[in-house]
Length: 196
Image (cartoon, rainbow, N blue to C red; front, side, top):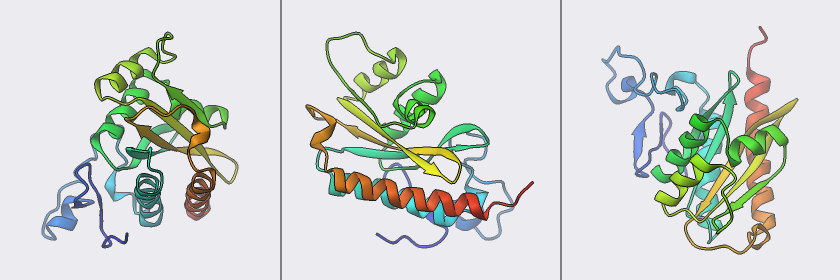
């Protein structure tokens, strides 16, 4: 789904301006989300990466029946930020991981491996994140690492609200295609950055 330039999908799936100046050309205010530490500042000027991340999240929820919501975590300036999300519940789970400094998305980026966690009677691997997931009725989480040039740059995070017996039940071809598209976008973003 194509969105007009200067907009991205908000938590309620409506197109929202990426900055105050996009909504009001006469505004000289700073971007709306500048002071939130876990939301990528909207004035970053990387529309290609934002569009690719938003598209991957939308495609994950439309092409993988078990996926209720999705997000993309990127490591920018050595800290995780959410750059795309389909639902508020995904954003809340991302922020819980950033706050706790642990969780599936962070583990996927640190280890370079796909991480799968599901609800169950055993003690939770990430207690604080598990509490938030339980409160939001999330039954499972999958985090797929995304590589860019010389290292792991982020992760595609998938969240389900219905029981899923195992990760392999998700369509591997769709997952690979989503990760490949994100990898290409992250690599283009990294290569385009000025060398300091």
